[in-house]
Image 1 (cartoon, helix red, strand yellow):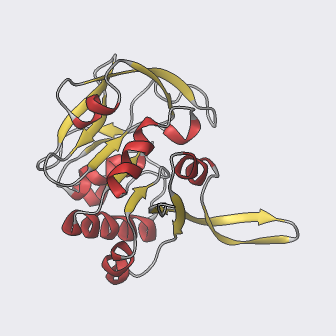
Image 2: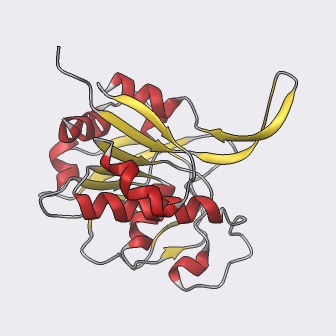
Image 3: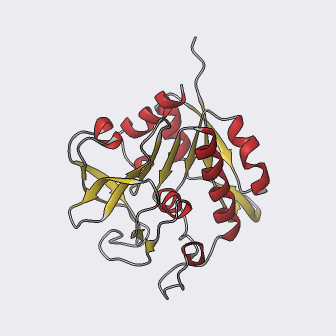
Length: 226
């Protein structure tokens, strides 16, 4: 039997309640591990840790997923916070930037989802639009909209045709980071995917594949991890 690749997924660090407990928790929506498992991988949670340990963590993994979550702190890309930007998650920003740096340095396959794509862009010197309308129609409810791939890109080789995707965000890529290329757009021109051409598998998607039924992006990551 071929061993399933080990896919590390970053997590929230937040207050949570279960049973009689109300405590800080390392939390990950169940859609993420289910997506990894359905695509043929083993899922491992990566809660915020000392960034100096990121390289040793990544060395033990076959691929890294930086999950969705809170807004990236604007200071990370040299901007003042917009009043509509959410509160910072500094421990998570620091840890996930270290994971991204370690994955890029080691050539470990890397997938950024929503916030994860934005943080990948910031890690490579890009900036973000701090607020936009129309991609989070109702608070706490995922919407859907079409995404069109850019021909000739990694993403287009995975999903060659326009596709409806689950989406929930109010920020987006502005200036694209060093070396990244845009590989998908929404109908309004919003950058929906970025990737880093080269020998390593590096892709960021603005939507939430863990909230849909399409396994293709995660299957491509698992295949790269194998």
